[in-house]
Amino acid sequence: MEFSLSSEQEMIIDTVRSFVEQELYPHEDEVEKTNHIDVSLAESIKQKAINLGLYATNMPVKYGGGGLDTLTLCLLEKELGKANFGLQYIVARPSNILMACKDEQIDKYLVPTIRGEKVDCLAMTEPNAGSDVRSMKCRAERDGEYFVINGSKHFISHADMADYVILFVASGVEETSRGAKKKITSFLVDMGTPGFSVEAGYNSVSHRGYHNFILNFDNCRVHESQVLGEIDHGFDVANEWLGATRLSVAAMCLGRAERALQIATEWAATREQFGQTIGKFQGVSFKLADMSMELKAAELLTLRAAWNDSQGKMTNSDAAMAKLKATETLAMVSDEAIQILGGMGLMDELPLERIWRDHRVERIWDGTSEIQRHIISRSLLRPFE
Image (cartoon, helix red, strand yellow):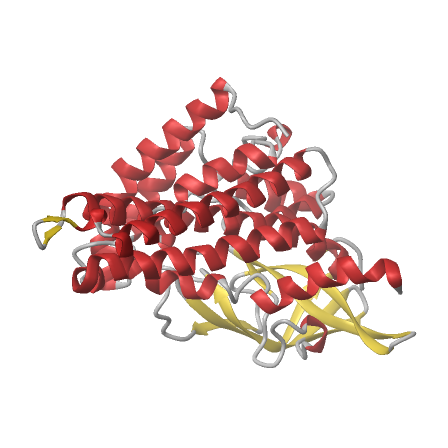
C-alpha cells in the first residue's frame, strides 16, 4: 500500500477543508439550536459545492460525476465529516445503488441526481426489520405490468429532501437449505405517487438538521419499468452499496474524531490548573496519547479498506473492520475529549457535545457493531465449515 498522497489528493483535501470551514462551520450553531436547515441555505451550499466540483464525486465521470477512486473519496468524506451531518450531507454523494439504473432510468433518475437536480433517499428499515432485513413485511405483489406495494418503512433519512425513494420490499418467498426466505426487489418510487405518503419520524439526539421519516404505502402501484436491478434480486443491488456506505461512515467518523482531538489538545496545552497547563499532567497527556493512537489505527484500517476497494479486492470483512473500528474510536475520542475539557466540554459553545451526541448512531446504522463483528468472525470461521 502506498501511503503518500498525490498532488491531486492534497489539492482535494485542501479544497474540501476550506469549503467546510468557510461554508459549513459558520452555520453549525444555528442548525444545532433550531434543528432546521433553511431551504435557501441548503440550495446555496449545494450550488457552491457543484461549482467547486465537490458534488457527486463518487459517481462516474461519464454520467457527470467526479469519478473519484474509493481512497480519494474517503479522504474527502473525512473532511466533510467534521461538520454538522445535516450540513455536510447537502454536498451529496448519491447512493451507488443507482448504478443499477438501466434504459430510461438513467436519464430519469441517475443523471439528474448526479447533476443535483434530484435527490434520492433509501428505504430499507422497518419497525420489525432492522439488522434482519429479510424479515421486512412491506411487500410488492405483481398485477400485470404493475406491482402493488403495501406496508411501511421507518428511520428513513432525509425523505423531506428527496424527490424519489430507492425502496426495498419483499416480493416473494424462496426455499433454501436453511428454510424459506423472502425474496427482495428494489424499486424507484417518485414522491407524490398515489398511495405513497410521508410522515414525520422520531426526534433523535443525533444529527440535528438531518431528519428521519416514516414512509407508508397503501396499494401504491408502481410500473415494472421502475424496478431497480432485477426482480427478486434486490440484495444483489444492496450488497454493492453496503461496503461503500460503511467506508463512508468510517471516514466521516475519522474526521469528527480528529476535530475532537484537536479541540482537546489545544485545551490541554493552554488550560492551567495547579500552576501548569493540564497537558503536563500524566492523567491528561496519556489520554491524548491513547486518543491519537486509536485514531491512527482506525484511519489505517479505513484507508487500507479503501485502497483495497480501489484495487477491486476489498472484502466484506475489510469494510466491516473499518466501520467497527472508526465508529468505536469516535465514541472513545469524543468521550475522552469531554473528560479533558471537563464541564466546558458539555456546553454548546463548543462542538464537542454535538460530536459526542452524534457519534452514538454511527454504531447502529448501516450495520450495528454486532453485525460488523459477525461479518468479521464469519470470514475467519467459514474456511473450516
